[in-house]
Length: 226
Image 1 (cartoon, rainbow, N blue to C red):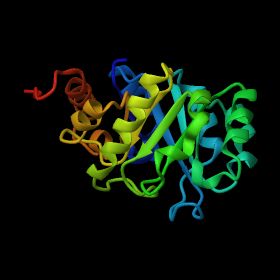
Image 2: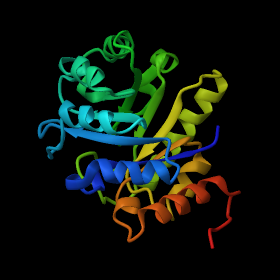
Image 3: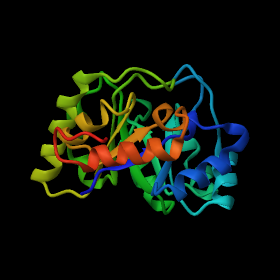
């Protein structure tokens, strides 16, 4: 599976969000991530279903909605109705993650589960076979621009091995500190979806930054973008 760079709009210009999403879609991005934070599960507050709905009206791009919120089951229907294609909930925020995953699928969206750095991949167990995506956080969730945690790479490798061994189709996503140095390392560890925020939207030319990151994860191990 070809690794994909997924731009995170957390680092985009919120006064021109539709413009930035259109820009990155024209650059070749197949999806964007929308980070939803509630100020409880993580120490930050961002957006809700109304922003997802507004973007859906102006873009056909795949909307990857990462719910960093407590009691996510209360809001799944609102985000699905707003136009989310994928809803990713945190294992740590769910009393019954399997039930939440099945609820997401009943709403017609794809389902993902995210793991904070301290949560081992073994908690997923048989649920892995029901997921469309598993997300390994390579920073503590809550704020953009943090440094990549290289000690999360063994978790990525373990999940890659398990997915391959069971021949499961779930995408393996990493999120946090993805840039020109860390993107190849995450891809080599087995990630097929790499979320990048400030490395793209914080760059002078977001289109070029996206192209450079995508080229880096497309290239053979050790090669460099000129």
